[in-house]
Image 1 (cartoon, rainbow, N blue to C red):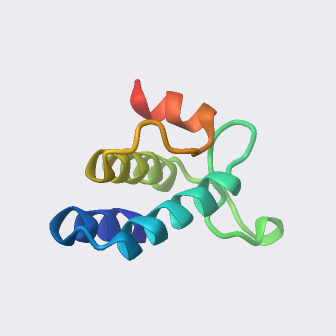
Image 2 (image 1 turned 90 degrees about the vertical axis):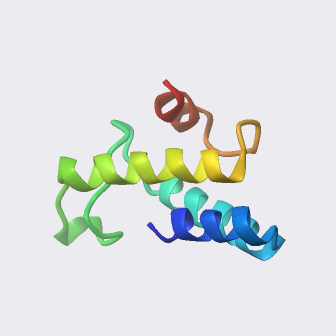
Length: 86
């Protein structure tokens, strides 16, 4: 997930553009979750499938981004913050 890369760039440079875009990407991904907190392989859910390998990777990348950005109180989806923080 690109947000993890951008969050690392932000940590090194403190350039706010990286932080803002990383958060936007995280929110895009979180807004495309299912009610079971998994993701289809693509945003075209009609012709897509869910695979746990990529879902686990997404959760890990969201967590890594939050750590790099030091954002524990940002307005991300609360349900996913609880999942990735535990």
